[in-house]
Length: 328
Figure 1 (tube, helix red, strand yellow):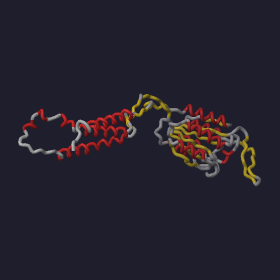
Figure 2: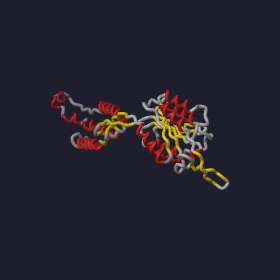
Figure 3: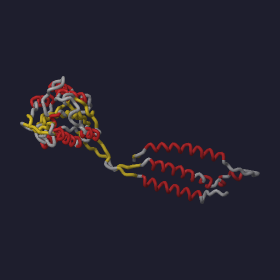
Figure 4: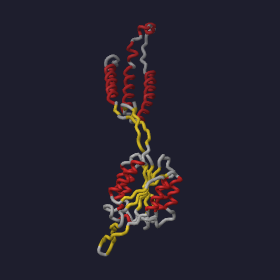
């Protein structure tokens, strides 16, 4: 038996002063009768059972109040306990939001495709602490590690290019992600780094950041986003937005080295389907089983207590108006 609102049980302490008041009142409310001798009242047979019965209504009233308090505490029963396993790790998503992510070789563009697939990935990792780091020419922590995925997804939805300095600071983005996860107590710490370019900004080299990640036991999965060859990119002109094919440059050797150094893996996403498949593959690889115990079902048990409450009140009313009825 468990209670949904156990704090209500403290109200049972109110019964103590109520009982004390009843005893006090009883000692001050004794009838007197002048007689020449009290010998007849000292005989055992003179003490009627009705004398003791007069306390029964009060006892029933106290019991009814106690049952009412138990009902307020919402007694519940559980059918059974069961052992189950779940998966939970700490993950930081490091995402490139430089303007090159507006290229439309992925639909509607690289950034929106990355956001959509990452959101699906987050929805499938309900037991994980997940954080978000973004980078372009500099790096910024968009969301620290959290299990409140609703907040994280809202931040993902509002993610846009243009609010960081232009460029691609892969090393700085990775180092920032490492700083956010390095003190985690989780058995498995993972960074998923997604970029579509070549490191050309930042004070920290990507390989140096990878060595730091390795020191803290952090595994880094790297994803290069972009088709092979050229990709359409929007340019703002006096006549509106014009599209021009630009060369796709991804520093695959560096991304592969980062993954190899940390025990991760490098992936190349050339379209939406391959990007989704990459996240699905990472999802299957990164799972740590945790044993938990939980009960399968709860049932409200107030009904039986309510029946007992009405029974106590009914018996009290009957006794008070029949066997121990006061005569004016």
